[in-house]
Length: 476
Image 1 (cartoon, rainbow, N blue to C red):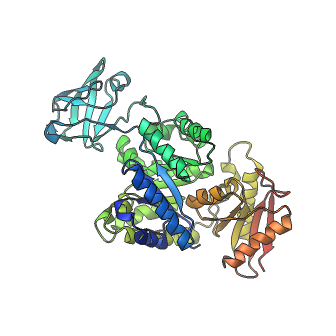
Image 2 (tube, rainbow, N blue to C red):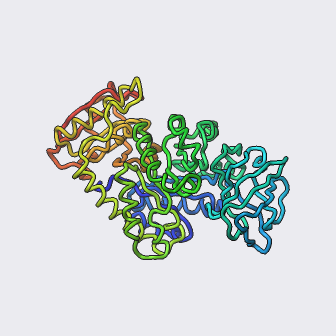
Image 3 (spheres, one colour):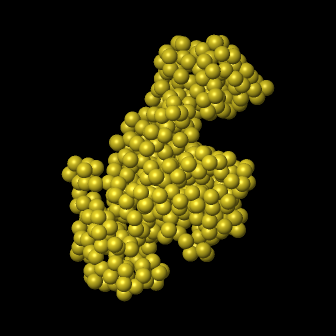
């Protein structure tokens, strides 16, 4: 496994047929994202089934990620589909009864807006191209002044960066989409527009009620989520730095630093982090990326992202396979710099939370030991995947191979940095377990004969939830 950072591809009309999906897998796709903001249930079902068939035929595990739309707020239909808002004009905004919007009266489909909004707060429309500022509220309506004017078009999105929206974390559409995702046994569900811990807990509880073990990722795209990141990380399996809406709701110049802080927080919590949005956007139409885009991907890798994501580039773009190939090349080059210039472990025990558990300390020791003995790989026996995540946050220079008796965990680890997962039935005897690991390493030609590996395991086997031993061995 030469590349450590994983590639997430959003599937869509451009990536539906089996041959294109086969080429995506060959080019380096690790995670297939289903964006439920678009497409029908039947289309998503077909894509999930097809990508799994292709992955099995190609002998590669592909993680399936369902991305729920969330409570997206929009303006209603607009008179003649477009009207001009002039800077300095006052407009009335209503939220109770749908109506055709004009340059004097705009309908927004967030019923509690007039109740939640305060004087001076911003209403951003169409990715922030239009800006209104609240003057006063009155019942289900409010008055606002136009700060940034321009054309107002039907069904454009609305962002409210200054207020804590009282929208439910999941809409009726999300619940129906989630039901389909769980039926299809998706590996990961991503929740949009998370603001606080309770938003994520609502999804976690809903999944637990079904008895499923699906991982949950929180999309960080609101300033409130950035402020509450520590408590959010406590209840999720990973996060996505969704820079699109995040860059609308906070000053764009703050996004790079925020990205770095969120990635660092995730690494400290041993939770995978996906960096997303407009990474190679020009390749929706062009056959090669811009230099700035290449630098953006490389810096996301150097920041420590577990995975980087392609959206429109692979969903509707003209060059879906070439864009994955380009991202693959950029990642590999960035990682070569990482290993040449940044060999020191990224995380040390000082970064752990107070009262760090044994697994965290064993994982750190395994990484340090692997560097000292020149190990060719770090292996871990894990039931839940937590040991693999704890090891991966140290970003060791050698690959991580996770061995688990849980097939769902194999798929869920597909977005974890530097990690390849294998399914093996756990043995009752430690020596037998180590021998089984060595057999897989040999059969897949992952470690040369005579090469050292460092193995973490819970003793006695099959211990669950307590990795307590580091073992150095030689593969024969």
